[in-house]
Each structure stands twice: as structure tokens, then as C-alpha cells.
Length: 120
Picture 1 (tube, one colour):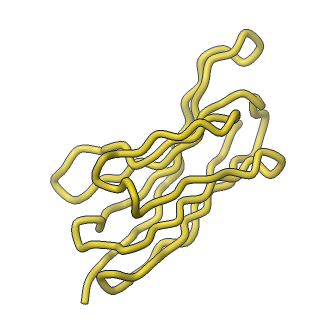
Picture 2 (cartoon, one colour):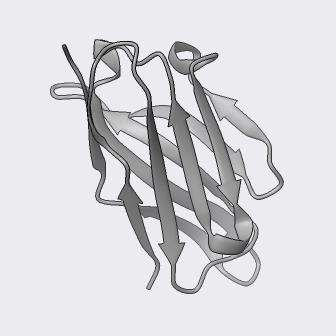
């Protein structure tokens, strides 16, 4: 059973910074994509950023230049450094681990989420 545990959310003022972390445990393929998605009240879940095990990244246009995703493959951990936060970044941020390999098949796991609130 694969588990994803997020941390680092909280309340921050506009213009502030937060760093989210997510660690995966269990039987995990070394070839995978980890990422962050967010869901605000009344809205659908949306992509924030993803990073492959090879280091390729992808960002939502709304966070480019402000957020940076990185990972530590040895620790199965992904990070999201969020700078210049705006009230519209307020959401529940979910960690995701997905991939498709011959040995592990198709997999797609989600964490419970960590709340980020940007408010003065």
C-alpha cells in the first residue's frame, strides 16, 4: 500500500512564502511523476506543478515564476516552494504520485491534502 503524506501548509499573508513537502512510502516504482494539485472551495481540482523522476517539470501558467517544484528521489519526496503568494492561491493542496511501468502497472495515488490560506 502506497501512502502520501503532505506537510507545510498554513496561513500566510499575501506576498509571503510557504514550502510544501510530500513523502511517499510503500512499494514505489522508481520511475514516476510526482506533483501537486489544488482545489479551492466550489472549484475543480487543478494542476499546480509536476516533476518526473528524471527531473522534467511542468507548471500551471498561474504559478510560473512564483512556484518551484523539486524532488529527492532517494527519499521519495517532492517539494513545492511557493513565493509571492496571492489570495487566489488559497486551496487544499494535494500531492500526487503516478506512472505506468511493466512491473508496477498503472498507478495513481493521492495524499489527503494540506491547506494553504493566503490572507491578510
